[in-house]
Image (tube, rainbow, N blue to C red; front, side, top):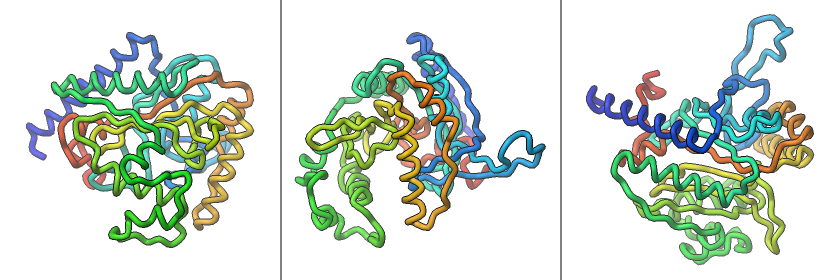
Length: 320
């Protein structure tokens, strides 16, 4: 990456930050900062956290701390404290993820809207992405679909009822270690290998109503087939954002964290401490809200037409 290209990338990033802050200031959404080091970790089995040890006085609390994988938990604690609509634009960290689409240290924009559901938040997320594209004179179409419709339209498979063998069939020519893979793993592989790569480059694709088993921190809607009130937003083949109609039930959230650790144990991964501060906040009462997290480098990659996240970083992990 030569000096001119580096400067252009940094100028575009600065311009995007300015747009984001103006976007939320006009909507009276408060910018906040929350801790990067936490006494709790992300229990999600498919995400690995970095940890470090605090060497100071033990009155400061548990010495082992984790670098946040997102700002989600502390932002929700602020919502429970009555802060209202808020967002954070900051660095997050994920271990074991490095390459053309991943850097272990990256920037995430995360925001929450009190009293909204995920459907209303989809509209705002699309608006923000389109304003970002305007910075580079790019336009985009929009396609919105449900998870089930997406699989039926592209693969002719009902993801909620198809057998494992039917899910595996389109991946027969992909080199996959199938040992210990479960239904959701095959569904994820179908999206990443068979569906997502064919999304048109200048189209925003929104996929909502995910399997209840992939609810993460979203509410479950108990239709005939229960679904998670969750959406993912793609620009071209890049996944940009993941949003929820947020779960606000502390008891249910604890059960999901404990189930994460159960899955970790089954995979011979380390069991991780639950975020008790978040659970206390949920028990105290968090308002109904919707929230979304958006990867800044992924958005910049789409804005510049780059296929390599390293082109959007002043210094990638290998040169940090």
